[in-house]
Amino acid sequence: MSRIKRSSTHQENKQLLEAECPEIYAANQISGQWTIGICSWLGNGRLRFSELKKVMPGITERILTLELKKLEQRGMIIRHVFPDVPVRVEYELTPIGLELIPILKQLEEWGRKHKAAQSSEV
Amino acid sequence: MSRIKRSSTHQENKQLLEAECPEIYAANQISGQWTIGICSWLGNGRLRFSELKKVMPGITERILTLELKKLEQRGMIIRHVFPDVPVRVEYELTPIGLELIPILKQLEEWGRKHKAAQSSEV
DNA sequence: TTAGGAACTTACAAAAGTGTAACTATGAGT
DNA sequence: ACTCATAGTTACACTTTTGTAAGTTCCTAA
Image (cartoon, rainbow over all chains, first blue to last red; front, side, top):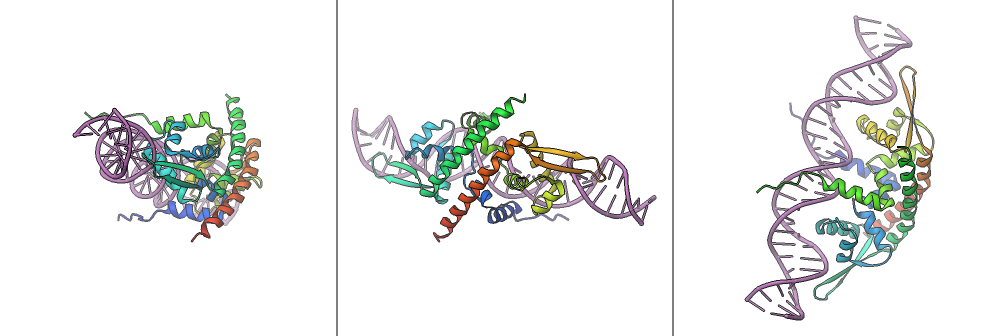
């Protein structure tokens, strides 16, 4: 009798979790294959679109655009446009974005340890 | 001339990033809709399958199983089986898993702040 | 006039992740 | 013989994320 659920419970679940757990909310803010990498690079100072592309070989322009747009909408970065020719665009972390950097550093430390522990187990 | 790329560059990218950036590696270890929630709950002590199900209404048995299996494989949790009837299974964080908890706490703090900042912007 | 660089956009395709529903094994209690 | 509970598993459908390839706009310099 073909009863097909139309609305996505996936989104519902995500939003409920975000509402109740700030740590999940936080993780979702920096979700995305390249997002943390971008934030880490920007932690050292502004970078332009083409510089980000250079430091993250493998990312495509489409994805980089999407990620940057997402981060901007989420209040993590600021987009500065300079009307040079060709146009120049620089991206910079916002204050709240900057506050994430030390946490990423700790994650980095933990990751290093975890990786070492895992690989030693054969 | 239908040239279709067969292999997934997605996986390739992921692995390259993980190899170079421990913070991305770390984030991937705790990726998954419910993963951080599970770790947080286990941060307070062992819980059995059915207890996790109870504290995270919304998760299905299938997903809970998958997440727990993934976390076990990644060395984040330990699975204790007690041959009672019906069987009892408890999950517990490993030492390295426990070390993640304080970082999650900080993420939680940051998430709270970020959320407040975002919502105040209309 | 044509080429060129920066920062995108568009249309499409593939892969990964998540969810639904129903089914399994085990042994105890009735 | 039948139901119950725990802790799963299986087959399948749907959503979201990521990737490919090509095109766009702006102005400038050759």
